[in-house]
Length: 91
Image 1 (cartoon, rainbow, N blue to C red):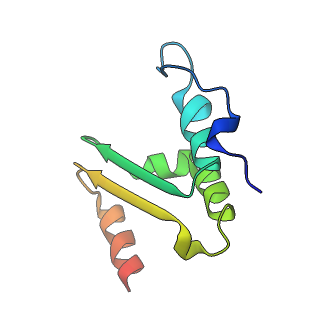
Image 2 (cartoon, rainbow, N blue to C red):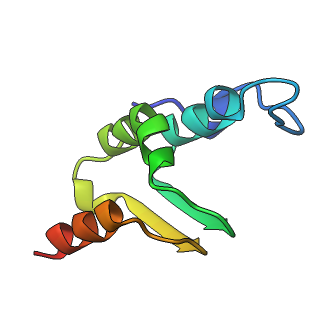
Image 3 (tube, one colour):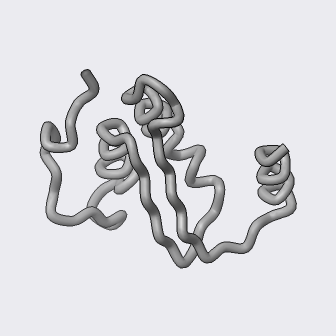
């Protein structure tokens, strides 16, 4: 059984000037989740590389990959590489 969100010592806030939000919050939260919702005014696909370990654990939390939900609402400027990757994903 994967660890639960309630089985972690969460802080009230996370900021880069007092820690590492990726390591302290995002990755532990994803490791204990089956859904990831994000709304962001700025987005770069490079963030997915930083949280890949957490996303991998999230996939492991489910018996089927189709149970995992990732929903993103983003304001972003896509690079040529990003657009090609999206097109490949649809193909």
